[in-house]
Amino acid sequence: MEIRKVAVVGAGLMGTGITQVIAEAGLSVTWVDISEEQLNKGLEKIKFFLEKKVKKGEVNSSHIQSTLQNIHITSELHDAQNVDLVIEAVPENLDLKKKVFKQLDEIINENAILASNTSALSISAIGSVTKRPHKVVGTHFFYPVPVMGLLEVIPGLATSEEITKTALEFGEKIGKRAVLCNDYPGFIVNRLLIPMVNEAAYLVMEGVKPEDVDAAMQIGANHKMGPLTLADFVGIETLTATMEGLYEGFRDSKYRPCPLLVKMVEAGKLGVKTGAGFYDYDQNGKKVIKSELIVKL
Ligand SMILES: NC(=O)c1ccc[n+]([C@@H]2O[C@H](COP(=O)([O-])OP(=O)(O)OC[C@H]3O[C@@H](n4cnc5c(N)ncnc54)[C@H](O)[C@@H]3O)[C@@H](O)[C@H]2O)c1
Image (cartoon, rainbow, N blue to C red):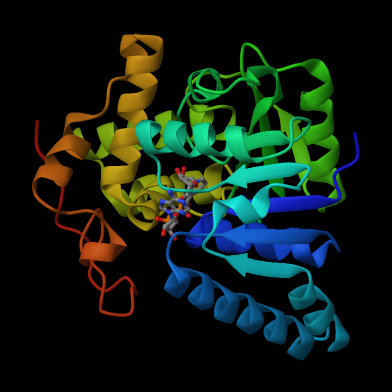
């Protein structure tokens, strides 16, 4: 099945990037959000990124016009009725996603595919509220979407092979390396990355300095960014919630969230956004002072 027309539902951080890459790939995007303000802000962001690309000489100026021409903003979900694929990027809340999928299922044509950009919710659960669970699939993009080259494709228990294959091909068509995952918490990237960051937090809890943990992984394992710098960047509460999701999903003690992370959430030390996490930050999000947060056993 060839995807020509796409709808993206949600104009937040992820919906904006997803809309940009699809429109840049030359496909028509109907972009829906309940908030017109979000859509207009999103469009401004896309323009800003495209202009930056022109300045850097990556594309010529006509690319801006041709990309923007492919984007049609609307606050009416009904305007998505004739598309081949809908990608949902509304907030991470199962009830909300189920509600949106139920509405979409009634509105869009019966051959269309419904995809969710969920980070951790069950695709099988989201698909179960529709009359087309075999056409429901996960398409997990990474932030910032125009920069990050990966797409995780997640079939639910009921998803057909044909739809999974179409989603993988679609990912490649819009310039991503698409990988096939299972519908279990964490998919591939978070299943590997989040427990590593959790172990890094255990090391700090046991008395190792955050800067030594980060240096060890950067120099010793060739990671671009240390795990604790990453934790501060992602947000300690997001990280802890993801770890809780793995723990609940697998009911396996190896995924227990580090008590230090839980304490940091309780203390409001959420990382860059609150000015303190494993490190301290100034108002521009720059690291300032080395953290004193070394908890003795
Ligand atoms: N932020 C990330 O780094 C990241 C990375 C990968 C996946 N995700 C996932 O992507 C999804 C979206 O995350 P986000 O960070 O872009 O969220 P966000 O809060 O930035 O944006 C959500 C948007 O959805 C809109 N919205 C809410 N209810 C709606 C409805 N009923 N119909 C239409 N629009 C509606 C909101 O107005 C808002 O613009 C979540 O499932 C999240 O887990 C996020």
